[in-house]
Structure formats: C-alpha cells, structure tokens
Figure 1 (cartoon, one colour):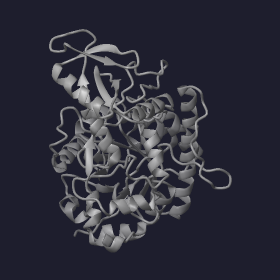
Figure 2 (tube, helix red, strand yellow):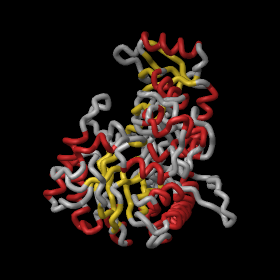
Figure 3 (cartoon, rainbow, N blue to C red):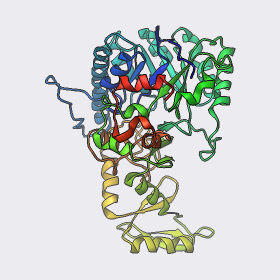
Length: 465
C-alpha cells in the first residue's frame, strides 16, 4: 500500500487519520486524547458530554425542572460543563501531539450556545469543530470568532455549495476541511436526502469527485476532504491516495475506535461488536430527528419496527373506504378504518396491544398498556435535547412546540443513548454503528477477542489493515 503522507489539519502536520466523533460519552477526552497522542486527529463528542464533580465522579444528568424549558436549561448547562471537561482531558492525554476536535450536531439543543460555552471555557484546547445533522450555516462564524477551524459534515456537493454560498465564503480562512460522510454506510445519523434511495447505495468515489470539483470552483484545491463512513481497511482506498482528482484526503474512522482499550463504552458493548454479522446494522428512520440513522438490530429496534407495522390510517368521519367504526381510548371515541384494517386492529387488540395511540399522520399505532405508559412518560419528561423533536413535539422556539402531535412511533433519544453509554444493556437500548461493524468478527486483528489500544489501532491502520 502507498505510505500515508502527513497532512496539515487544524494548523499542524498530522497523520491523515481521524477519529469520528460519536455522541453522548461514546467518544470522550480519553479516547480522543489517545488518538491525538498517536499522531492523528482525536474527536470528542460535544453532545451532552459527561461532566464530573470535584472528586472526579461522573455527575448523573438528573433533571429537576418542572417545565421542558427549565429542563432544557439544565441540559445545556450539563452539556457545556461536560464539553469543557472532555476538552481538558483530551488535551492532557494528547501530550501535545496531534490535534483535538469536538463534534456537535447542529440539530441538538442549543448548539450555538454549547459551542460558545465550550470554546470559551476551553480556549486553546480545541483545534477544530466537526458539525453535521442539519445545515450548520453559523458554525463558520462561531469558530472564526474563537480562532478554531471548522469541518462541516456533508453527504453531497450540493449541500456544501449551499453552505458555502450562504455563509462559508465569508470565513474561508477557518475552513479546515470538509467531511464527506457516506449516507448509506456511516453509523449514527446519516444525510440521505429525499431524492436518494436508502436501499440503493451509491459509490462514494464519483460523489467525492463532484465535491472536490465544487470546492475547486471556490479556490479550495488544497482544503482536505475527510472520507467518513464505510472506511475499514485503508488498502481498499489506495486509489484515493495521491489522487490528483481528489486532492488532499484524510480518512475518518467512527466504528473501529469503539473497540479499543481507551473507548469508554461498556465491555458488554465491546463484546457485542465482536459477534455482529453482515446485515446486523439497520438503516432506519425511527429517530426523532427525522434523519435516517444506522444502528445494530436488537430488541430496541425490533420493537420500533414491529410497532410501526401495527399501524392503520383512520378518519374521524366516514370517508371513502374508511367506513368501519372502531372505538379508541378510555372514552371509546369512534374513528373509521377500512374493513380490512379493522380486522388487523382487532387482531392486535386480541394479542394484548390494546392501546391505540394517534400519530401526526392520522394513523393509529397499537401498543401494550405498559408501552403506552412508557411512551407518554418519556414524552412528558422531555428535556429538549434536540432543536426539534418528533417524538415529544418539543421545539427550541418561543412556542416550545413543533405544532404537531407527539409521535409514538419514535423514542426519547436522550434517554436511550444515556442508558447504553452508562450501562451494560446492549439489547434494549439504541446502539449506533457503521455498516462495516460486522468486520470485527472476521478481521484477524481482533482474533480471540483482542482489544487494541488506540495506538495499536493507529499503527495497524497505517499498514493498510
């Protein structure tokens, strides 16, 4: 394999190997600091990062506010304090090597406020900010204010063009690079557009060529592109190295760093990764963000899929084929289904799915009484972790609502991601992963359950494996 050449990223020459940021304590100061110490770019999550008390014990994120807005204020304070702490840990662990980046989701609650809070509170410790999940127009101005490089995450040249023309052209000096994330293969939230087929993956090479051509129009010939999503063996990407069509390239790894000594995930999670088979990672659209996301198939996702299948359209008056009366709720209010759908509904009720919950799309979803209570409790306890949440109908607006019904087909993402990050439950919580995670089981590097240090992984990557 062609030897990797160092690349200037965030003002320093480093290996073109980047740790992908993973939210809510899944990439933290320990893991990102170790990655930077190995000569690459470490990335800690700025999404509700863990914070600690004066004795170094993790602070459980408990919410005391009586309203969503009050709880949202608590969440933002947790986020800022946690982000500052993780930046400090990463800085200490890096031993002055590599670069430290912070990853945020633009659609998370108070993204701008969290960025200001962490970058102000950890001045000089964060060298770059990666940001996706939405169209982060303001990231450029915020990062430039603190003298920090910014790295938008996009899945198409068209998305970058929109960002550049609206805002980035004003702050070109701080555009450190562009992260191209394969929307079919990356773990976590993906950038599939409505015009793209989730079941028909596209080759990333032509899409990255198009992105580079677009960047060249703006004079960004030497601005690095980070290839993210689907990267496992660098030998598979050899034609991308020293390729004049693509220009400077770095490679971002999100899933492989999960299985390292410094990775903060539980041993149960690490062992689960070693057992995955091809197809075990499922591209779905259950997230309350509205984005597609990729996660490991387990009881959590299976429940969401089964819940969505126990669904029928209804009307409040007889219309067209909707002429079969059906009683809903404690007050036995009558709605109208098609005769065929009423048969299905009656069958679900007979199996114990007696609660018919209304969705924003004029459908009914059938769940057990216990699941109905859990869903409603989670919706009531919403702490506003997103700028807009389909599950709870929270929105970070003056009204505090999306204006739509809360959607029982989704879930509280803050609750489940906190749970899997701080417990051994890998079956009943959401486990994000990239689609190549099944390679842990076949990659000789992990024979007999071997878990490498970050440095051992970085050394291995440089061999092409």
